[in-house]
Structure formats: C-alpha cells, structure tokens
Image (tube, rainbow, N blue to C red; front, top):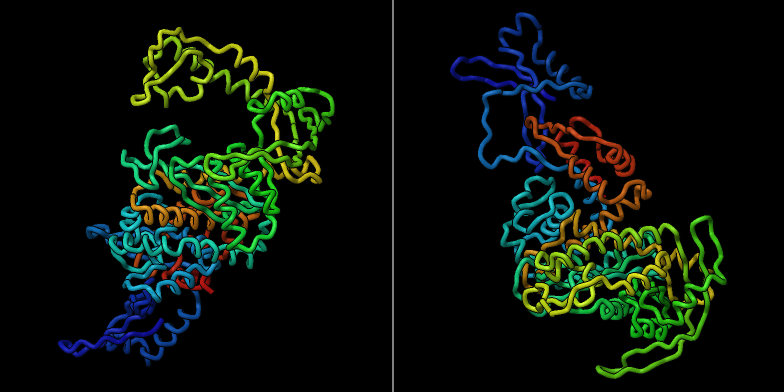
Length: 566
C-alpha cells in the first residue's frame, strides 16, 4: 500500500488516497484505490501532518495481511461481448507434472530449430490441459484457451500447423518422457503390459491409416488401431498407431522391438490378453530372450487342454471360491517364417488354469442376456443387422448377413438356437487359463502378473470416455498421430497424479474434481473460488497450490504457477 497525492490544477487542491499496487496475471503493473481520504487542506484541520500520518498507515496496512476485503459491485454494469471472467485453476496440478517431466524444455528445444513463429510449448500445454479439462476438438480448445492461466496467444491456424511438428517428434517425446519418469519415479521395464484398442472417425473415407476393421464399439466407420504399452505401476510407456484393418496380434512385435531398442530394456516380460496370444508373438518373445504371460481361450483350446482343464485332479483350493493348478509341457508353436509360409517349433510352456465361482456366475449371466437377445433375433430378424446382432448371432444356427447392408439374409433355413454350442460353453464357465514362458514362477505370481492387465484396460476407458479421444476430427496421418500424442501425454500426467496420491482416488474422479476447481474474476486483483472436496484437499496436501482458499489474488496465483516450474 502507498499514499497517492493527486493535484488538481483547476481547483489548486490536492486529494489523498491509500492505493494498492499490484500486477495482473499477465505481469502488467496496475493499482486500485483502497481508501479515499479527502482533500489535503481539509485534512490539515484535523492532522498536523496528514501526509506523514497516512503514509505511515498505508505502510502498516501493507504489513498486515487483509483478513477481509471490501469489494464494491456496480449492479447495473454490463459485460462486454467476449468477456471471460471465469477460469479453470485445477489444471495447475497437470501443469506441475508437465514441468516436472520437463516437457516445456523438450518442446522449447525442438522449436529452436524450426521455422515457425508460434510457441509450440504453449500450444502443446493448451491441447493437453484442454484434453483433460474441456475435452473436444482443436477448435474447441482454441475457443476455450482464455479459460486457462499461463497460456500465451496464438491462432487456430497455429494449432493446426503445429500438429505436423508434434508428429515429427512423437517417438523422441515418448522416449524423453520415459527417461524423466525413470529418473524421478524409478520406473522398471522388466514387466510390460500391452493391449490394443481402436478409435473411430465419423467419415466413410478410408486411406492408408483409416481403415474399416473390427471395431471395439461395433461401428462401421473407419478406425485406427492403437497399441499401448504400460509399466507395472500403470504409467503409459509407449504407443504406436496401425492401420484399422491390422489384426491385434500383428501389433506387438513392432512396439516391443522399439521399447527394447530405444528404451534400453534388457529382458521384458510382456503381459497381454488372448488377442495377442499368437505363435508369432510367442516365438518373437522367446527367441529374443524375453518372456510372455498371455491369457488362453479355454473354449478355443485344444481338446487335450480342455480335458486337462475339466479334470478335477491337481487343483489346489484357495479360499472358498477359488482353485488353480498348472503344468509344464512341450508346446508345439506355429509361426510365420515369411509371408504365406509357416514353421513349427517345440517350446516348453507353463499353463496355469484357475476356476472361480464368481466368474462362473458372471459368465452364465452374460450368456443369458445374449440368449434372450438371440431369441428375439430369431423371432424378429428384420429388427437386426450384423452390428446390432453382435454376440447373440453366434448362438444361432443358419444365420447369415448381407455383406453390404448388414441385414439378416433369408437363406431358406429356419433360424434356431445352437443348443450344442451352449452346452459346450457351459462346461467351461468359470475357468481361465494363462500360458507363460516363466516356468519357475509360482502360479500365484503368474496370476498376479496377469491381473495387472486391468490397468491398461482402464486406461483405454479413460482415453475414450474421460478425455474423449474419439471421435477423431483430424484426418491427415501426421495430424492423427499428433492427436494421439496429446492423448498419451494427457493420460501419462493423469496417471502420475494418481500415483502421487497413492492410488487413493481413481483418475476419473481426480479429473472430475479438477474440472470443478475454477474461479471468477471479482475485481482488479481478486479471484473467487467456489469448489472444494476431499480430492482437492488431498491434492493440495501433495502439491501446495492454494486449493481450498476462498479467494486468491492475481499475484498469489502467479506465484503458485511460478512455484510449480521450479
């Protein structure tokens, strides 16, 4: 605080004010009147030295932090078109991790040798924070950029132009993030979880990347396949895109080879679902000295293995609901030597089988739902198409579909439930099988390794439903990859926040809370907050960014943002 003396020439009089100086969120010096004192000549009648007296009071007001503030509001004031007085403050948590990983340094260094005028680091920050807080298109992110603190100005064209730049440095950026996580979080890469999902485009157009294939959402739109590798803590390790018509099993070898080569991993045990369980992947892992833990379809297993599974001998009961057994056998693995040519090799393999009554009940319930749908399909075939009949059609004999329209064809054969298939499936309810190269590992360890795969399945759910990575609105291959790089970074930041909180709160809930942590600009220097919960309290204990305060000054907010960059 300081004393301001305004001299008015027309009257020849001096007016005194106590004024507070401050800098706005952009660092521009400003001031506001805290108290109007009156004309100097009038004050001299009451005080022998008004200037000295009120100069001292202003200094004391500076030394004594305000417990209460008085804000005058003009109830008839109107907002100008385009005004954005509400800002999200929750993204400061993601910004903290972003700077901890030194991603600002990475993008600033890459931009030094690029021929463009925009700030690539600021654009990446906006795209990542918007993907987490206000997920949507690139245009939507640009329209909402004023909702964030600490974001520089750039145009929508700058954002689109930056996508090719981000694509060029995608692999290096993933490797850089890995190195920072290894340094700061002691990441281990001896156990890698891997899975594949796909993302759709709302278009009929296909190209080298966007292809029609098996869609996880059972859509007919072109899709792109994404393979995601994750470490044992649930933190994303690497991703790679593939054409939409690529089979899941063909994606593992390329991404694993890159992890081994670029990340310096020595021996990697890959944990994956049955879609990745192919002879090529098994041989690739074992020949290179790596390992695998893959689930095995019990219903699609050989007759000999089904007999082993259903034979009650050898099972060890674990609790009231659970039992398991295992064996090590020489397994015949068929793999590709070159396109169109196969070869067989004999490899020792451990097979772990377990049964759970809960799994059996769940399998029966799911099949009952599908059989109900199948019965309706048999009675009303015109109501269904291939996409809507998914799951139920497998239980119907004599059913076929038009390849172009997807409609149920009239083959002249009566539709009926396949009772034999239903009986065979019922036998295997509750049984799960895992095959692995880790012959000396106890059964419990193998099962625990496999159970960790749920984290990568959850990560896919987060990218699809929480950060809304689909549908994808860009169409050039390099722009599509840049889009998924943004999603990969966003997911990594969210997972690291979850890790810092000790897994107390899931990612979805953390993001939901941070979306609510917003503030409204009250006057020249103050922001009013209106949200707090147990998640924000835990985050503030961890990050110390002022969560829970009802008001913060622009200067305090600026200091918090400065503190997370140190």
